[in-house]
Image (tube, rainbow, N blue to C red; front, side, top):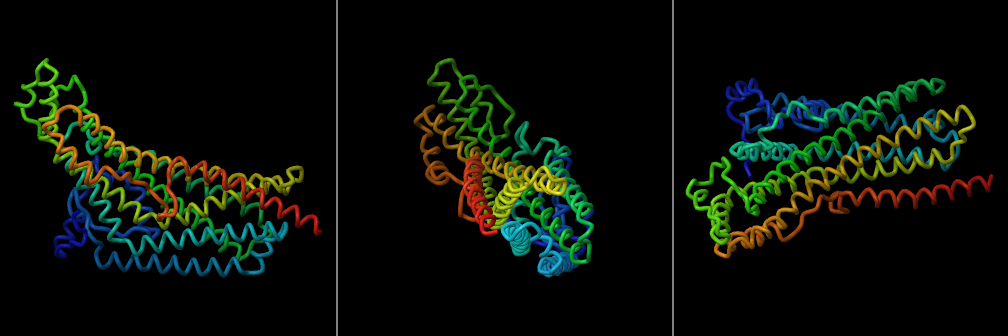
Length: 429
């Protein structure tokens, strides 16, 4: 992989700032995510060296990034101070001690998620630039093939809609909550609700960004698998691949053995490029997992506890009373946000993992086409395919579609425990 620690002379950097990514570049696809996360301090203000390479930020950009991180650190300290103030503690423990502890733990998990994500991003500046550069390098190779993901237009991005939807939803919920709790309005209350929602937005924005990267990775894995799968077809026809010779195409014959031999010769000619693409994509997959693993672990803990506290709040709410009705609606409104983000992450992790592990099955079908070139496939299987890859939350558990079932089971179990504590508290009173 190419190193990103390459910053040219100052004059070269200044001239490179004016360069814009191509219309089908992933930099354009991720433009909103990158811009937002830069100003939130999660990503560096990188410099664009060429259409297929970005570099380390300038000294001035580093100072700006550090200033943003210091400001975020000050906000986290202010948030802790606000939560521990008597006004906010009274607000959190208004209903009962069990409810108050549940609410307080929800705020604590939210702060831990934001702090962990910010810390991991701040110490992994080089890693995220390497991930983006690796994507650009793979796209440069894919542009040599027709109808590749690198050639598709990146101007429309449904992950941008998810991002705006999440931020808009959080803003509406905050406005509604502030309007209903004006009796508690103070400096501490203003700091508490603002910082809490900001931390929510940062954590959700980070997860949407990782999901977008995994979506891009899935498209490229799928295309490489299609390149391999074409050699299993009995009706393979000539396509405009730069590494396929005319001699190989003309050697096709109706005789099955000659036909399979011709296919294997074509596969042997293209195998080096295909294997290189697959290995590069596997490296990107592992780098994304290493970069985001700890942050995703803390977010999933926070989101799962958020779902638990919301489900518990809806259960104990007395829906006949007007005040409790509003509290129940506000509590329930968080469930679609947490559940939607978890589903978005889990499904994209599962798709990327399935495509990465699907290559061995496709190669097995190519394997039977001819014995002469089977050593090429054997070498590839031995080095990079036999061990399945999995996207994990910092190695603690695998993130895929089965994670949704596991989370649902855990939530039901702990919800029953919370309800029993609530009933015990009522019996004592």
